[in-house]
Length: 184
Image 1 (tube, rainbow, N blue to C red):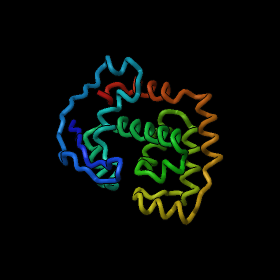
Image 2: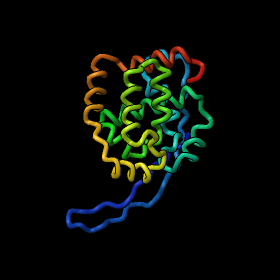
Image 3: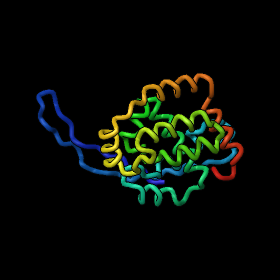
Image 4: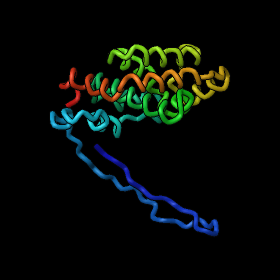
């Protein structure tokens, strides 16, 4: 796994642009997912290799290519984690507005496969409000959001209420345990 670390410029107190080193440093980090990691029950730690590798920023082809080395189960869990994180941070509007909207189909499949039909219904309804098939292209999704101007407030509320009843981390952990070999 390759991680990029870099630094850029900063603005000092007087608004002057002061340049710092304009370098990017490649750092190789090996993340091993084994029984010990899986048994701790932290879905993020299990999906971390996918999290740092998947490309949600450069379009559908690059997204698919970046996930080619991972199992279907890893891909679905990755998408569900993004969906949950984005909705918890800023609702469905943020989920679709940000680059993360590219994962919506995988998230929907993952939620269904994980057996959380009510959450899947919420995501499916949000997709309907964006014409039934939100674009995987971010700029096109922005146009859909502007044109259709969907109101997701009720879906956000349903999602948050459901999270009080269903422990989605536990659901994801159970999914990992049932498909253990797909996460090594």
